[in-house]
Length: 285
Image 1 (tube, rainbow, N blue to C red):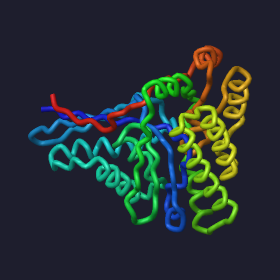
Image 2: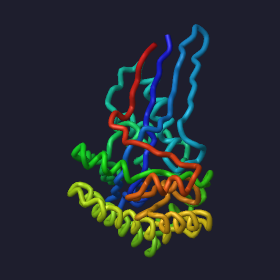
Image 3: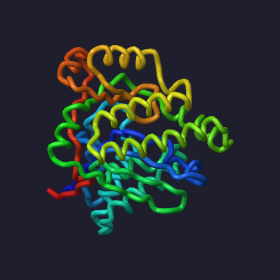
């Protein structure tokens, strides 16, 4: 018998990094993100003398879409098939605990997006379970929203060094970093409100502002290639752009009213997507 599992990677609209301890020890972290129809797939074969585990992903390496967190969710799902652990939020929390035990610097948003799917506004406070608000859009608005979003892959990024420096600055309670993170969190709340009100152009403005704020955290969050690509895209119809994840490479999320035209201008490295509404799935064959 072979057991399969899959979970979606995520795009982070706003609030990333505010879900990282120790920021959440003193402040409320908030993230607005969404699972998309690009997945980490896993399979497990239980043989008499060994267990074989395999993974593959639908996205390029170091894309900034939370792949490592998703892999842990998928691994736990395969193990969960035997332990009957069906609580998706619990699986997300355990996946995060595994990364903490391995000294991986990061927050919880990747694991929760992978487990739950959909568009979610997540609130984080240290030693408390996250508060999860599902953002339910009318089908017409959801379709319109999807029709304006796509990803552009700039190449692999190295987020660990950026995250480590930012984490160290949080630990030192550097005023500029703490101030910026609180502004990022406030902007994510405004982004959530705009989306719930179906004010998509306001949402796009907040998406732009998220990127402006994020670049204040570390100089290597952006690169000349990223800035040149965003500048080119905005000259050709992009209304908003931000890099997903920790930055320094990976995927740029674009928002555009003329999405198809812009994708043709960018030509390659395009990742079009729709939102995933199922989250983690497990099945047998």
